[in-house]
Amino acid sequence: MEIANLLPTLEKEDFRILMAIEIGMKRSKYVTIKNIKFYSRYKMEETLFRLNKVHKLDLIIRDASKFEIAYTLNSKAYDLLALHTLVEKNVISQLGPLIGKGKESDVYSCIDDDENIFAAKFYRMGRTSFRAIKKYRDLLGNRSHYSWLYVNRLAAKREFEALEKIHPLKLNTPKPIEYNRHVIIMSYLRGKELVYHKNIKKPQKIFNRIIKQMKTIFQNVGMIHGDLGEFNIVLDEEGNILIIDWLQWVSRDHPNAYSFLERDIVNVCSYFLKKFNVESNPEEIINNFYKI
Image (cartoon, rainbow, N blue to C red):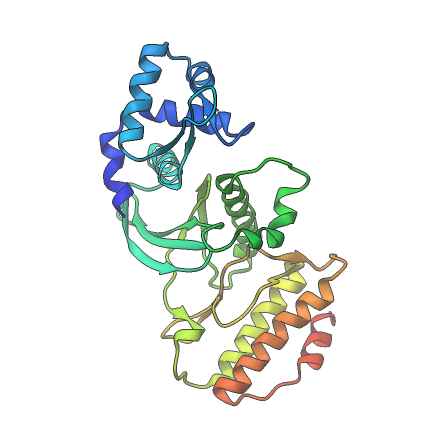
């Protein structure tokens, strides 16, 4: 990751300037130099020097169209701020190669000082379509001003909290290690998404494991995935399954819980019927979820 190479070249003063812009972005998209000076607690000369440096490194975007020049962070700067914090907290020490890319996130391998391997998930919502914000209205509440950086921060927090609820059930789900801003550090995911498996051994058995895992999560922590399909079910060589991407989960107490659960189960049943000729009865499966 190109951005990881920048990390050692930045000084603490550079990070302080970036964080000052981040604070200012809570109020407006672009932050004036006067406000950056205020939030950073630097003198004007130092503020201008640091702004010039990080601007040359392509970490901030300048707006000179108004009366006062102002700046905003770009996604590279946000990546750097998150990585810097995670390194400072000794959560990770090095970022590895890209191991997964989705519509809303990138996943990299990473290691800590003891060379334990983890996965680092960077949320990238807003990369594809601004219309997708409707899906995340629950994240934003009634906020009139928001940035995509803030949306991604909320998304990471929500998924991290979901993993914390699910992990104690011991279902091979990723162990949540830490999160900062829009980045989640979790145990390394082995295997690949179901959609990339052309053939699988004993598809009926795999199907049953998926349904069983969904049911265990539903009955023990009251969670419904809300967006389940072949792209977020991981299968490893031993036949272990892992349900990932819990951003859109809903509680079983949600007014539309039944319809969300129905959609998830129908998606799984339809895929296994079409791809592996596994027949099932979605209605019967759903009713079984509500039996104690």
